[in-house]
Image (cartoon, rainbow, N blue to C red):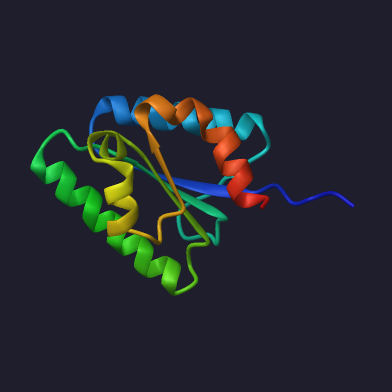
Amino acid sequence: MSKKSPSFSLISLGCARTLVDSESITNKLQDIGFQWVDEGCQEEVTILNTCSFIQAAIDETEANIKDLIARKKAGAVKHLAVVGCYPSRFKKGALELQFPEVDLWLTTQEQGQINEKLSKLVFK
């Protein structure tokens, strides 16, 4: 009996670098068997790749996090990962207190660990 491939969606906010990072994340996850799906398709993981260069980007990121948390509470999002510039700019401990519903925070420096971290999250 084979396991169903875990699915993920990815929302990319901000600059061209975020788009490049999102493409890299998508490729890394697909390389280990994760299946990319459109957001809202009952994916196992929703990844929000963020920008925090200016206050407007921070506000957009926080609004998206709050929206995804509401969807998680409603059962539409199973696991939520926030990656990129936003967790790089702010202390993780503070973010975990502000948004305890987020399952995984990864800074830009930690994005190379995304396969390992998401696999642990999905298969725990």
